[in-house]
Length: 231
Image 1: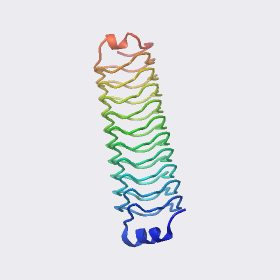
Image 2: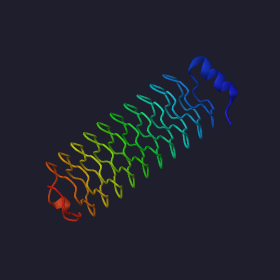
Image 3: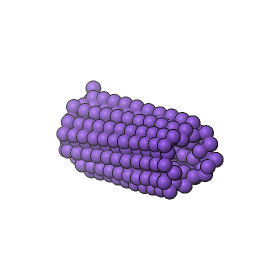
Image 4: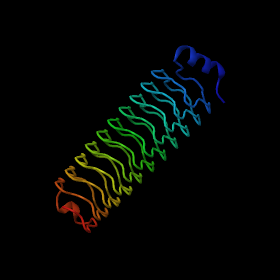
């Protein structure tokens, strides 16, 4: 379990880098602007906590409960968030560069303008998530669930979305240059005005998808499933 001395230090100074707070129960806690670099919060409960502007660089947060938490503008670079619960969490403007969110639950989370460069989101649940203006350059989104998510104007250049469920996803005006969309389900997806230059759409399902004004070649669509697709 966690070290009680570490908790006392955190409460007194708002700083606890490299501390062990494993499995701690702190729902609703206010730690805005705290310095928690390399902290161990594995299996902790921080649901509904205020962690805005917090520095969690390199922290261990696997299996953590952050449902409803405020992580706006948080520094989450290189953080281990495998199997994390982030339902309806506020991650607007957060920096998740090279973080690991394998199998994380981000249903209805707000990641608008967040930085997710080279972030691992493989098999994560992002149903109805808000990602408008987010930077997902070179992100790993293999087999991700983005049903109904909003990615308008997001940068997904060279991101890998292979075998992902992108049904009803809004990619309007998004940058998908060089993106991997092999075998992706894009049924009823909105790709209007999106830049798909050099993207791989082999075996992608574009049934009833909207490609109005999208930038791509006929060759890219040769091996895609087109049915009631709006061009």
